[in-house]
Image (cartoon, rainbow, N blue to C red; front, side, top):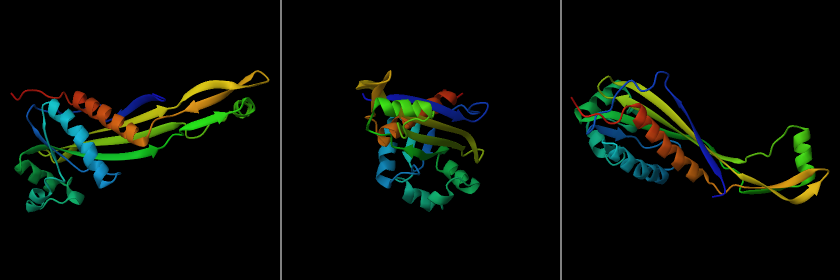
Length: 208
């Protein structure tokens, strides 16, 4: 694959205070931090995952006309008044997504044995070896009109480092290859973050 992925999470202390109910409708906002086309692609990847968990997702961009009929605009979607109107439309929750902390790791680098010796001597490392992306989820309840849970998933994809033929004074040269892309890191953070959020919110219980 040419890279080693890892994902870490930051969530609200105490976990998710709500239990999502099977069949509930959730409105998913347009992901912030990427282009409109990329936002729609992310929704298309997230939608089946949310639906398979037992919820009924809808994309705010596709519902724009109906939202505006209720006086809901994207820039004020999370204020108490807008959340109350979403509840009138039948939505139990609103998902807000933000994409950030994007870093493109190097694709290929080769260091001589002397360069490796100098880096170790000065405790320095090769820059930009990791491709990184963070996806932050915010879950709003339309019943309480409040933010009830946040979760950030950061995926880092580290290049694979292998010794090369260069050798000097007991040091071996190194070739590092990172075949990952920011898009790959975003996709993985989105998928794993959504999975963790749904698990933390006990997705999805049957209604009593």
